[in-house]
Image (tube, rainbow, N blue to C red):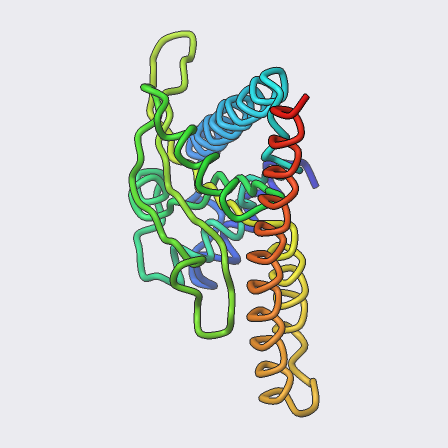
Length: 234
């Protein structure tokens, strides 16, 4: 099956069993491809900004605050499924108006204060617009999830226009990311025994990880202080 026909079939399956393929035109699919390309361009733009910030700090003698950067563009079928689940119209306009997580970047940092430093440096750039913030570090989710979420908007330049595009940026420590990855895998195991107990154990692990993150920051600060005092003595 050609790629376009396969895409039509997936869209038809998501929208409803009543819709026939003739209602999804190839021109609309071309417009969808164009929109998704723009989201991918926004991902590259924000990722480049983060990589440059990390390189700059390294040249200035600072420890690199960013350990790793992951990015993804939500799959077409998942985009349409989410619109349908939310009760939003299925259209290109609806994707841009109702979904902020089509383009996503996950930034992994060593320490908690690195998270806020990276976030502040990113949104302080004059071509980055901060749309919203959800601080799940200061206000963890009931299950223990911790991370710093931002929706930002960046201008993307094309051959005939400049268009602002939104990107979701999640920033967390290595430990937070490990916990989130494990919890994400666990919650999809429907047949797990003693599920409530497992959920509670995961929440306790999240608290332990949070305490460890804070302790590691204290140890780092102690080492930095000793090193600075030694440099002054020299």
